[in-house]
Amino acid sequence: MSKNKSIVITGASSGLGKYLYKSFSKYYDIINISRRISSSQYNIISNLEDLSGLKQKLEMNKIKHELCILNAGTLGTIGSANEIKVEEFLEALKINVVANKIIIDWSILNGCKYFIGISSGAATKNYDGWLNYCVTKSAFRSMLLQYQKDFPELNFKLISPGILSTNMNKQIKSLDVFLYPDMKKFHQTKAEDPQKASELIYKKYRNYFDREDIEIDLRSEDEW
Image (cartoon, rainbow, N blue to C red; front, top):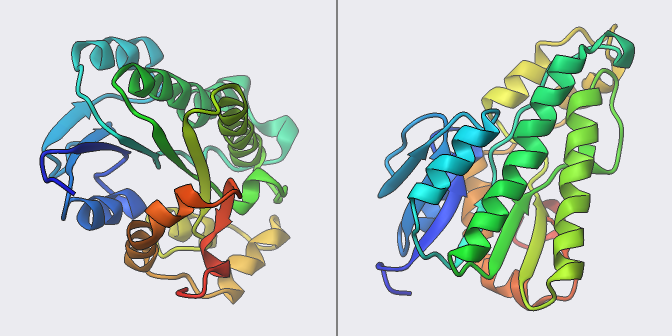
């Protein structure tokens, strides 16, 4: 691959996104879209909750790219469903769903044909106190499946990396397991190094796009 080719990684400044940057920057120039600057060749700095600001900044940056990795997201406020404020719910929806639609549409206009959405078990299973995350990751999953259905000439994959050793995992493990029993899983299951996930995604992403299955769980891969 030519180093002159560019790809988008959202949230390339921290967590899994930072390691995805390290893995993919070996052969690509990286366009980081996040609220914090990264070491990427291009940084489009925007709070993903500010949808109009995000759209405006993207329209100002017309950069051709061939792959878009939708990684950035928020766990959101934890609490019983009826205790979550509407404003908190809307914030999670904006960041995890609507902002990604804006980025996908911008990427298509800039020639992108390959998309990877970083998914989660929370997209198909509910956890105690996770209204914001479960609902928005489910909507994110459904949105990418709909794009693939409506645009068969494009290529969408949903990749679930499992439990990783990130700040989000630390946040989850700090929750009271008596209030949120499902969180015991995160204490009982070893959190993997995000670099392991990023390197596997980088190593196999071309193969993933040749596969018929849209959803891929890294934990089911032989190399994991």
